[in-house]
Length: 298
Image 1: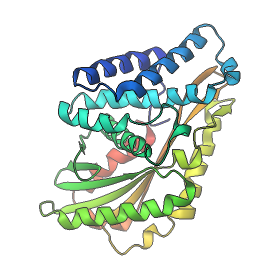
Image 2: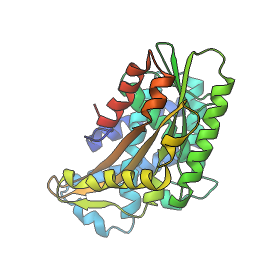
Image 3: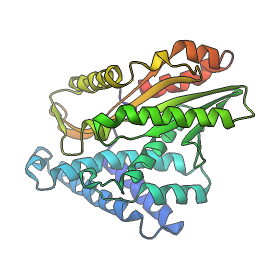
């Protein structure tokens, strides 16, 4: 089961329209332009669905932009559901960053990539809330999870190219070690590297076309290959507080058996068991369950 549940296009549109109203009420005038473009594209997909011509979108001159808007639209809808519980000024500041840049990921530049990096942080926060914990956002660390005396820092990276994955993991490790050294309060402190490999695997020009949803097994294979190729040394690290790596892939997919375009996603976590047990000897079990539930989609 995917970490983000498949949702009806109309449900996604409803949430995005409410999100737009919320951001406007918070005083964001320019940042929601990307959100407006996403809404317009999903409306076009919904119109095609009601007219039973989703597959014909494959010949649409902007087909890649349309289907990627569906991916980002569902992610934004999940973020909206989570952010409504946070401080409004934090929401405003984070979304001002997250909604910069172009509607279509293929049009990203180095300057606009930070926006989708921020969206990755917020999407992980939304998933953590969904499985029963409340991460801290908008602070120096990307995400912080506190549970029963344990504290887990997450540093999130979204490499643009596959060959930069290893460097991004290294940077995240260094950032986490700085968080550990500056933390004077928690007895059990650890860190998880979180990597979105969506852009590195698929720059935004492709979408899956499969017969059945189970045929999307390739996403799991991609994650395993990336981990073996770029992070196979993680278990040999010297800092036991670095307890694992989380990977995420998001991509649009057309499933012929259902006739629908939807968000296909894969989220997998590779725990370093000795590190986890040493870092969280008492309270680590409940903390780990949050992440296992994220990965299973429950």
